[in-house]
Length: 388
Image (tube, rainbow, N blue to C red; front, side):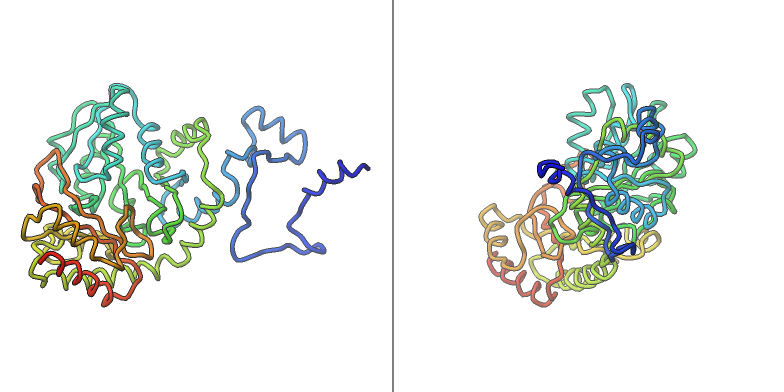
């Protein structure tokens, strides 16, 4: 055999050494476009769409499938599929389950990119969008039409942290044959079980707490059996797949999720209670605080709180003062996203289609990381001092 041919044959590999299977704690990292069939009969089945193995690199390589199964079990759903990012998971889910002429309801405090996609892209396909109050419950009935296809919730909502009465919404939706979707990224499947509350589709930004290290972009969609076949057909036609490296890192993050989330929760609550005593602070917006308007719903439905919350100032500081506050911080990084080990801060105002609890108020959102909470409070003191 010529050397040029031998070089190609060097890619043959196996997972056995001296006849013994090699098993590591973490799964192998599979990468590739071509997946070789063992025999002609398998190829023939793939050509007919009947092959139940992996037929190509876009067909969910094993690392992705391991992550999907781990998330499915954690969520308690029937099927999970992983996407390249959280917003990608949301976009594809909305495309999969809507058609021209449908009407959908979006909670008004939903993730900004979700709302923008619906208003600027999905509406082009003649899907009508109605925003509903961010603390909606049984009053969802006032917004439902004959053409309403689905209701999309996020509880607590992005940036302003209102909580919906999920069981009240899902009970009404179920009576009328309307799908319910929930972005459950804030609580993760550890602290909120959407399917126990009647939700049909649970969406996670794996980028956040599940991965936990701000170095992964992934999203997941888990659903009841009723919708699994329809979604799987859409997924295969679109040839969606996720990065094997990111799936590997997300699996690693899952192993420490419980430990990390408890630390995020404990530190954030300590800092939130301290902020309630700071002179410059008006409202601390944290669902686990008794002062939160939906605290009773949080206690009923949630098993814990994560490390993301916000506060408002008593004064309407000008831009220069806000800049002084933010720039004085050292441990808090200025940046989007959350759920990672490093503490982050954003400072902004948020417009709502429905009435807002914080009209024209600046909201400071804090992602409390894994630093010592005492050090983080000292860092915030520097920011408050810069407001003087």
